[in-house]
Image (cartoon, rainbow, N blue to C red; front, side, top):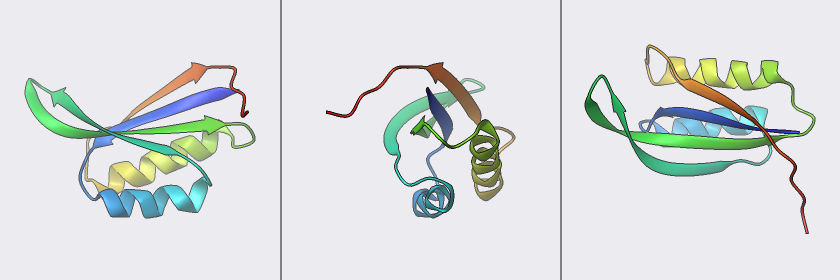
Length: 86
């Protein structure tokens, strides 16, 4: 199991949510402050616990967000994890 984290600029938040829900049933959004080339910007961290969804889905999702926000890039992090619902 893996936790994927996509970090993007926090613009078009509703549009980002609409894109995510096309691919993923459940996710977490975290508002953050990031820096790009020494300048602060509002950032959005999207966390997705992946059980059945493949890496290609995460990359497609990230590409759609990158396009929506007209960004040079978005960051994808893959974190190996063991999670349990109680």
